[in-house]
Image (tube, rainbow, N blue to C red):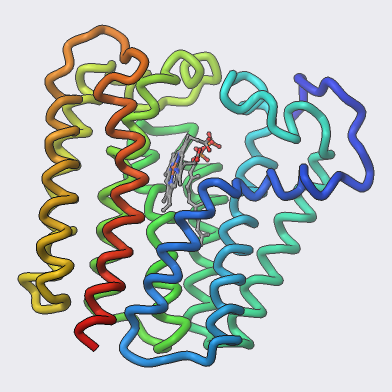
Length: 303
Ligand code: HEM
Ligand SMILES: CC(C)=CCC/C(C)=C/CC/C(C)=C/COP(=O)(O)OP(=O)(O)O
C-alpha cells in the first residue's frame, strides 16, 4: 500500500507525541473507564498495584490495536478530511515503525496482563486486539455495511477484561456489560457517520449511509437503540444491581431513546450543525460514562 499523501519526510525515531497519537488516546478514555468499572464491580478485590497494572495493560492493548488499525489504513486515512492529518498519512511516522510499535505494544500488554493477573484475561485481550485490528479493520470494514455491528464488538471487551483480570472468570454481569457496549456502538457511530458520509464514499468504505442512505441509517439507529435500552436497564430487574442503578439507568436510557427517535424522525437530506444526529453522538459518550459510573456507585453502596 503506497502512502500517497505523505507530505513530510518521516522522522526517525518518530516523536513521542506522534506515536501517542497513533494509539487513539481520546477514544481510549472511555475504554479505560469501562475497563476500570468492570474491575471495580467484580465481586472480589485485587491488590491496587495489580489492578493498576491490569488497567494499564488494557489501555496499552487497546492503543496497540489503534496503532495497527492506523498502520493498515494509512492510505484510506489520507483520503478522508477527518483523518488526513494523522501521523501516517502526513508521513510524520514511517509505516514500518508503526507496525513494529503496534506489534510490540500488543505483545507487551498481553504478556504483562497474563503475568500480573491471569491468562484468561490475557487471552481475551489478545482476542480483542485481533478482533479490532484484523477482523474489523482488515476484513469487515472494507467489505460490508454491517462492519460496525460485528466489528464493534472489539470495543465491548474492556469491562469484561477488567472483571476477568480480578476474578479469572466471566459471568452474567460482565457479559451484559459487553452486550451494552456492543449494542451502543451502532447508534454511537452511525450518528457520526451521517456527517462524514461523503468522506467514506470517497475512500470506498461501505459505511451504512454510503450503502443504504441517510434515511435507512437513521431508522437503523433507532432500531439498535431499542435492544440497547432493554439490555442497559436489565441489570436491575435481573437482581444484579440495586435501585440506584435502576432509576439512573431508566433516566439515561429514556434520554437516549428520545434523541434516537428525533434522529429517526429527521427528514432533512443532510444532517446539520447541532441537529439531532450531533446531539445523539455527543450524548452517546456521556451516556456510557454515566451508565458505568452509576453501576459502580450502586455496587459499592450495596456492598
Ligand atoms: C467500531 C466501533 C466504533 C467506531 C467506528 C467509532 C468511531 C468513532 C469516531 C469516528 C469518532 C470521532 C472522533 C475521532 O476520530 O476520534 C469516535 C469518537 C469517540 N468514540 Fe467511538 N467508535 C467506535 C466504538 C467506540 C467504543 C467501543 C468506544 C469506547 C467504549 C468509543 C469511544 C469514543 C469516544 C470517547 C469518542 C470521543 C473522542 C473525542 O473526544 O473526540 N467508540 N468514535
Ligand atoms: C481492548 C481492546 C483491544 C479494545 C479496542 C477498543 C477500541 C479502540 C475499539 C474500537 C473503537 C474505535 C475507535 C473504532 C474506530 O473505528 P475506525 O477504526 O473505523 O475509525 P477511524 O476511521 O477513526 O480509523
